[in-house]
Length: 504
Image (cartoon, rainbow, N blue to C red; front, side, top):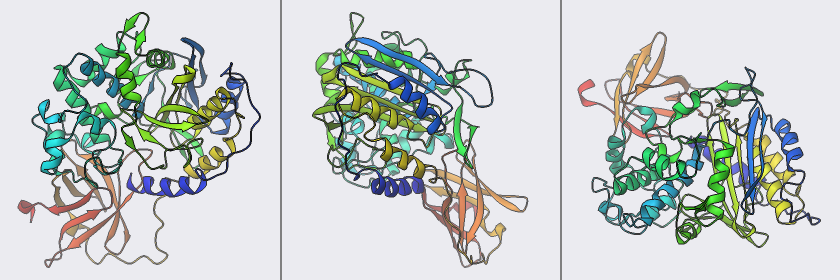
């Protein structure tokens, strides 16, 4: 994902965030869903999204709850309010809320070093090991490099082994220095809450949130996508929407594995907006909800922050959520993306209103388009104000999966494919084996033998391609030893691997 993130940052920063705001006639502040249904129907077609589910809450009630389009472009079946979607990174909000229930019962403190709860955790350096807290993990201030380190789940390691390997995961910045969006950080946050409560992360979310909130169609594992009323995952291939394999990251599930519906997510929004209470039950203490929303870390505007977020609104991390200031209001928000899904959850506490958008297509700005329309209408602005800018960004998103351009006159690889065969090791990622596959090479990583293809690109550089609709090939350069065999390789996404000694 390294190249995707890099390209996205450049494109979106240049096209989206510095565009001027349009002057706007005031819209009604009393009806946040006026014309919203018609807009969603139109946007679904414009953004080529097969299906979506939307819930809007205001003043303690659900005022819009509806499905749009189809669950699967290859089959019949409409999306409705009970269709199950992967939540992707909106799972992080659930992880923070579940951890908050442990804080409320006095078994966990946001600012106590996590070694008090998870003594087996060892960071890359003594400072991280000794002083990292649950707040650091939930507010993206660990210093671990942004958008990297996720592959251990796919490679087949269990939770205990992933936790052990994090001692080899080198931070990019010191603790609390610069915000870095880290899925491994949320995995650890889930493990800390689990250890403090003596429940697994899955049980914690299911018993502390789903059960009391009556979120009966929500889950914490991708097996829930086998339900008859679950959506398929979709991606664009050569301009056409196709069904793809859903992302499965259950081991590090605290970062992204939860599933839910628009109907169920409306209950979560109502609880947050009602200071932690739902149907007469206090799920979270009011001051704990405030702590979740409180700004714990400032962040630079990045590729995932589309209008109305801009350099004027700022962006901050709370605990499992982000926030920004818009039109005089604090907006609480969390978005998510996996191979075939996009999601967004938005709350406006002082308006007692919120929206959740679940869409079964990745690399689309559809959720942000709906969010912008809703916010602008709710806050008395022109609901169409940001739509042109978001649409332009969406066109660029379609180009993000383009492989790196091959040189016009690529150099030849002077060695043989056989010279690259072997088992290579990295302290953090473990082993990846390169094996002969007929006239080509393939890669198998970790205990799961997670597969990748390896194709020559230029001189000693090859392209390594892992499966997944949103994966782009990463440039992999081999180091050839004196004996003519490769003794290691450097991969743009995963770092340096060296040939295992016993294979030399």
